[in-house]
Image 1 (cartoon, rainbow, N blue to C red):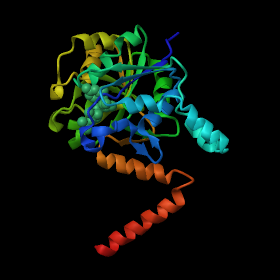
Image 2: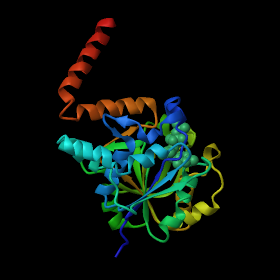
Image 3: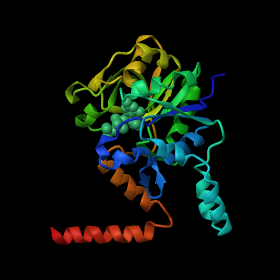
Image 4: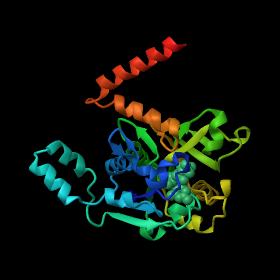
Length: 297
Ligand code: UTP
């Protein structure tokens, strides 16, 4: 029997410089799509995939994240007294079972690989998931759940993958494909942020991973890679060099890069339009905006 994936690491220690000045005081992961912070979307996706232990790798200035997952008895009592049951229900999603959530500090932003490595003692010898909350994925079946189902068949390590335009490959980890089986591809190499003309394919790694515990050992010995950072991609690529399986998984769904301003705005529109309580008013507004734009041209 393959070991179930019940732990997930959420690396949230980055500096979020693309959203300065906002991120001077607010963690990027607390920024809201409609009325829920990015981190809530990530937690909901993890829960749907069967994750029971949530490990946050944080840094200075991220205390709002810890507060977000705390119980708020005064707020709850006040809502209860006023009979605001819907809002009470919305708050429930932010409550974490005692002991289910852990915070580890990354003292220096040395890269995603380093952030994941900081959580090594909480993972021990079992497969684990990694979720980057700034990649938000709208999907009928949540992306990590799709991956867990595929992983139950394959084992090894698995990364979420998506086709991107060739000229954009230099912003991603890119897969060197051995065998393309449709949704699933087996991988013979991975390279982080290659020059576009050197990229082995246009299949890019997106922020969802299921990793074998050996990846943490690899991270202990990995040198700084692209951008002078300790790269998770390099530690996964080492699995292939060591003869272990790595798969890419083409998920079904739409991914929004909420680490970038354009991606965040696109996600706001898409999630706003998907909300039954907002979509009529919002789409009327958007129609009006595009008419104004056309008139001005
Ligand atoms: P990004 O590459 O988006 O970096 O990190 P960033 O610092 O968050 O944002 P910018 O580029 O300065 O605007 C991808 C993910 O890896 C985490 C980030 O928090 C984010 O979830 N990360 C990155 C860490 O936890 N530690 C690091 O040293 C680097």
